[in-house]
Amino acid sequence: MLPESLLACSIAGDNLLPRFLRESDHLWLRALLDECARCTGRPQRELVERLRQPLASPAPEEKKRMAAHVLSRLWSPKSTAGSLARRVRAAVFLESAKGRAPPADVLAAVSGSLGLSPENLSRALFADLPGERPAEPPRRACSPGELALRVNLALAQGLLFRATSVRIEVVGNARALVRQAKLRGLLCAVATGPGDESVLEVSGPLALFRRTLLYGRALASLVPILVNCPRFELRAECVLRGRSRGLLLASGDPIFPAPEGRLHDSKLEERFAADFRRTAPDWDIVREPQAVASGASLLFPDFLLQHRLDPSRRWLLEIVGFWTPEYLARKLAGYRAARVANLILCIDERRSCAPGDLPAEARVVRFHRRIPTDDVLAVLEKGGTEDTRNDERRSDAQASI
Image (cartoon, rainbow, N blue to C red; front, side, top):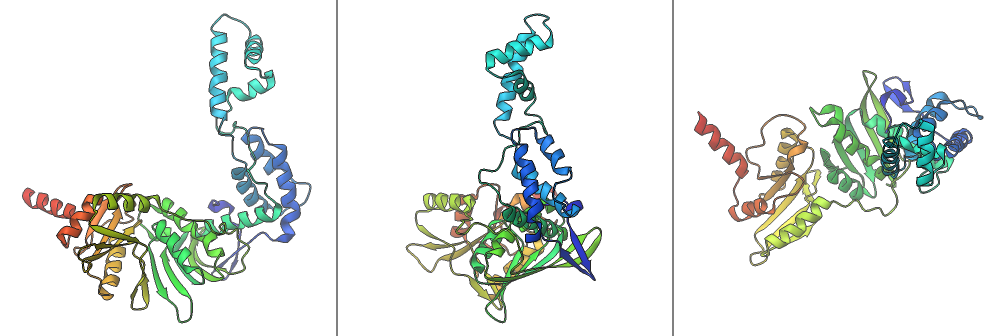
């Protein structure tokens, strides 16, 4: 993802036109990749500095700065640099403590004991500091074409990071997109379009009161999934340099896609399913049950919980990531319109995006990192209408009056 200062866009009226890298940019991208190869094993600061210098092949400055930003992250520092630096410093300090030998003699003695040349020893001495860590190429070689797609992806994600609202129309592979939105906890409503398309309405990070950084990253994760859809159109309102403008991304835009067949699994869901089967042997749990139609909208519960001896005791459970009280109220209204009475919402305590009280009619289980299955089972057995923790808070408040 790119910072605002690097987002290369043209302005056409009230619309943003991303300056995507094309095939015509591949020549200077190859020159940029060659500069990175020369810096392999050198300190990260040298790589950054070299990428700022002019290239043998002329390059548009705005596009070059975007590509350099992406490359400086692809050529990540070696993870082993820290342990080596600590070992070298310890040896140098111990050798220095033996007497008052000149620094050059100390380094010479240590380099012999560690089997490093004096030059490599000096380089490793502070190799764990930011900018001094040795640059390491990605495991898989990056071609100019792939680099262009990665830069375009970072540009699109950087623009969406500054969105107030997002509307996505997609035909084909919609389930994968909706699942990714749910797994990342986005504030998202799904509806059926007039044709075969599914329509996702997503709140943008700049529309929220808090958690905008984490939410923006979660929203950006939709872009590579979207590119794998046969046909899509994304429209967003983005605030760039203090002004709101429209953004359009559509099928055919040259953006790096997510790997085919990639599984976006949720460890949170897996742990809950395993914990629930162990805690509630009298209940069956079905993952990803059929979507619930609510008027023109679609609701996607995460689990169906059904009693083995009494199948009429059925509950839907949905895990909510980022949330506001208004978002929960709209979700509950959708389930009510679909005549779903038995619903449990599991909400992440860390991801509240706005102040306010929870809807009074909500059956809520709060969680932090792990969903408490005992609390879920208590709702199933009690069938109450309010969060038990809310009941405790109300009792404490009344006692203090």
